[in-house]
Image (cartoon, rainbow, N blue to C red; front, side):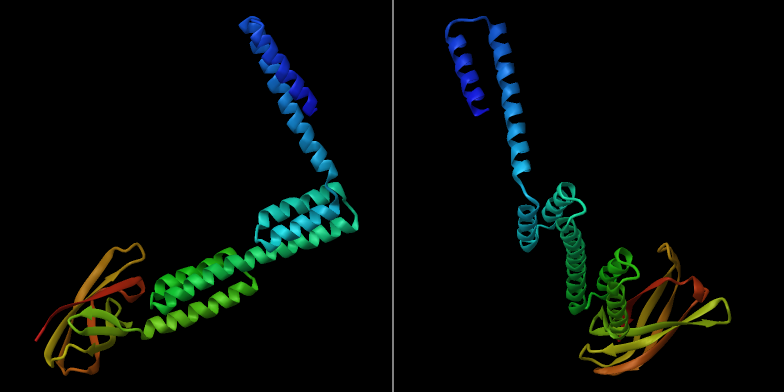
Length: 255
């Protein structure tokens, strides 16, 4: 077939030099391109015919080792097509299942490493969201158990982590208690690392619903607050507790 291409090329060149019409030349050129395409198609068919199940399995193993998993699976599917219901097909099916497991393991490892990195930086909400992707993508699996354990650990750390308010103040362990139906008591711990004693510190708590709409806010006064001390605080907002989805606390003033 390569000879056909060579001969056709010579014919095209010869006729071109002999002054044939442009229409005849264009037709010969189209014929040449058609033969060229057919030649490439034939070469690919011969190559595919020469591929044995054994060689395909060997190539698939090499691709798997290089972590080219999709390429490996494509080669293994060729084995299934060429040699169905044979020991080669059985081996190919086993390898496909193995590669699919490896792909999942790698995907989970990426999410766990990403979440762990966020956890180490005290970015607990981001870490929890990353672990949550594992539960969403691989429910009722061994990976779900791993993810839930990490989420629980991050939630505990988040509850105990100090949140900076500026001016040397930080808070943690914030909670809400229902009071008389229409009110909610806000409570938590406040730390003074400002370098100065405070006779009074005024905070403001704002609470929001699930759509991030402001439900209300209220003051949190803290009296007689020495430097390097941790104290409990409480405040009140006129909002039903079960409507609260999130909150923000800010430092307003102190002396």
